[in-house]
Length: 453
Image: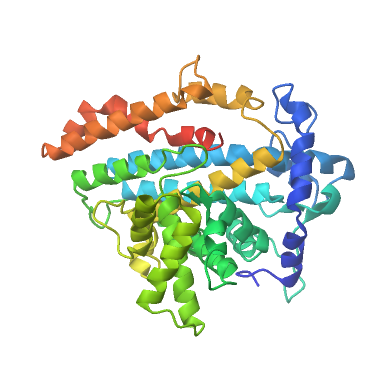
């Protein structure tokens, strides 16, 4: 029971209503107009965990409104924190601190999952977890084990199990299909064009659970989590990674964050992988799809979704390319290293999966805010100040300057590449010569805002 949800817990989670959550978020706009997330008297505004303990498992009806407001307000805030954790992980791997990179990446994933769940009306706290049910009713997610003892799940375990359950629901495949876009066509529209039908939902579940692998692994493997977080890193020797590899990984990951109008550079690889996954699933289900049939099918669906014969040929060739070309980022391939337990404990695959999960959750939060009619200007009181404090932008920054910041980032990446091409080998030299630019490109908290535009 401890490692899986009971039927009662599943029922509670399934009762959470996305539409009711959106309604709650809309009602919070009255606070945003006053440049606040919550009302002045919200009992959960400070020390929410302590207040939930005081509630003794039963939220006072008078406080239920406060908890609803807290959960929906946490959606963009968790996302922002998640991206900032990941930025610190990028800096850690550059400096050779792989255990620290694992620690920070995992907590980025945890906060990303909490953001996603909150957008679905599920609040993850410490052993007291709640969901927003029909008509905004607050429901505690709980049950008893076989011995009649109440099941109390910690944050790590609850986040994974609730995320896993969410991936099994139709709303998860609907969301993933909408937010991933390639050639101005959403992922679900690509799938609607495919002849072999009925396999999008299980494909979406597989994708989401693959990128949540570290949530599952570390929620169950407390020993590994603690080793990465608390044990001396070099006590059994130091794993030296060549500086050129570290710089190259940094460049690829930062380039993958250059989001424009909600679309990330990695989206096209996600579409290609998803289509290939459906082909494999169809084959397992007994369908006959030989190479020629598959090529013809790809040509057909590309013609339906892409305009221009020359571009059609280019896109079809890209989708049919099952093995990554040497010019493609290693991120997608590394994130897919799932079967080997050894890879599960290496920082590069973990960081790559973190980036993929952050991309998905950013899209989910973008959809959440748009559905609630909450604009970035309405929450500028928060992100503008936090961005200044973190050095993401200057006091006079405006959203129409996003492209200028991306140009600055790209210029830094070009300088890093020139350093590599010149045969740079010294960690000290690279970090000294490019200190300001390293700080700038690893400050990826900006993506939590730019990704919502």
